[in-house]
Length: 72
Image (cartoon, rainbow, N blue to C red):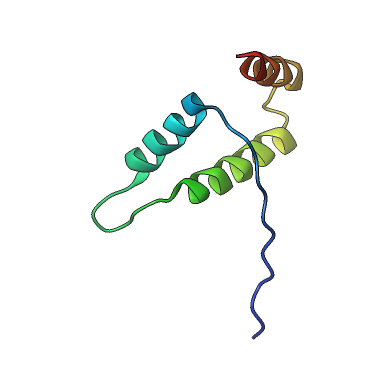
């Protein structure tokens, strides 16, 4: 079976966002399973897409929240 082709994405994040990623990875991890920050990002993308498709996310609030983060 051929390997899955993976895409790379590079983004610039703030120190606060990096700290949140690190904290979330730590909280999700256990002795049996260590989560990387990349896995946390993939999980967040998956869950956000699922919420949007289900109509459970207010896109205007989400956009406003993101704009607020970029202003900092």
